Image 1 (cartoon, rainbow, N blue to C red):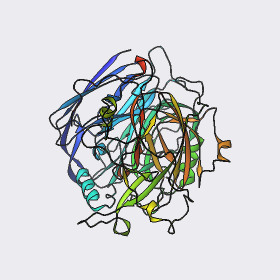
Image 2 (cartoon, rainbow, N blue to C red):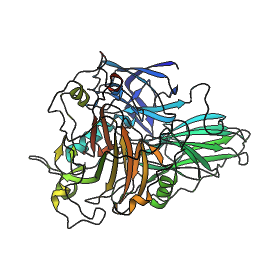
Image 3 (cartoon, protein in one colour):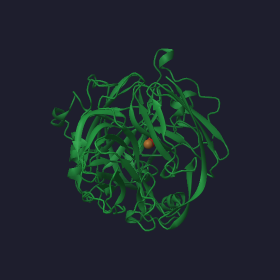
Image 4 (cartoon, rainbow, N blue to C red):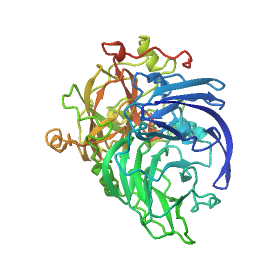
Length: 544
Ligand code: C2O
């Protein structure tokens, strides 16, 4: 195993996109930032130098961070931010996971442009559980704004309204030839006929779930969220922000040019999104075509297509790093995932629904980050008052979650601010039902848990039925993920083992829902042996 070292300089720069010059924050001068390539078992050391005007943190999305929680990165959860002019070195080992993950800023909305791919290949001497690809290609899907995203967010938070939708989707940073001034460069992948390419697809968009297709070519999914899957053949890949898909593309078509294309899956009603398509090119060696073939994209509200993709993938049971489904449950949680409102506050005018402020919650708790000390420091140094160990295991009121709710008690719509977390014993097994609600809006929410992968036992629409739905659980080869799209108007059931002491954030990966409070955290207690206790923080851990 190797030690892989990188230096990330975070800085503002001006880029020209969509006929417009925009100042953005970026790592090492590019959007997306550098691709990190490691092998399973390696140690990654990244020195982050913050020369931007903003507070910065970097999160290694999906990395287990076993006993290295100080390197996880969410602002005020595992660290205070790296202030302008300062630096922090993230150091951690990558063990028992292979595939595609990514890194991104985890403070304010800066991940819009501060992100990149993190590719974990098998240790030398071990192999992929599928055909060796001829080439591996990161495909980073993003969003672009012709505005300063930090300004947009602060305006939205000030008025309580939702921020503006993006102005374009991007493939590896490029809006592509369907947008003005974007003909060149359109992302282009040159291929040779008769080869197999591994596309490492990452949804790095802030707020949009995306369909991805390649004209005339099928894709064979072999991994999601850096966990291997049974091979799953599909003509469309669907991802929510945070999720990744490893897919094999075989160049088995006539020599020619084909578009790859991205369009939104907008499950919600009344949510602002950009209804447009971004495309890139796949060009066969020897192609003389001047009119590439375009795939037919699904309708933006095509939930059946999204659900088919999300629910039919199974895990590669018995494959590399496979963990069997835990069967002894220690903690059962039922967690509602709500969009709601919070009161406007004195001297403010609010532009959310009913003149209120937009909010979101889990079990009616709108999570607020601490401001003086990170939660992980509070955990390690035993400081009270930073978070409260009282997250309700069940919603306070049981109702018909996914029905239209005009008649509902407004106390459920207006949610209080909270610092509630769930405390877990070391090695506790958790089964969690995530239930979407329709209090004021309904949407597929990509819920991400830091520090753990989980098995997805079942998912469905309507209200979860604790009597009948357990018979649908896949306990043999369920998919394994770090981010689960809780179906619009539906539910999902997950299980994981809390084998990693520390503080692990859980939140909706639609960026706008995070400051609204659609979050909580797990505090996992130390275990009995030195190798099951969180070590002390590194000396350069940023202070608040
Ligand atoms: Cu990819 Cu907490 O985030």
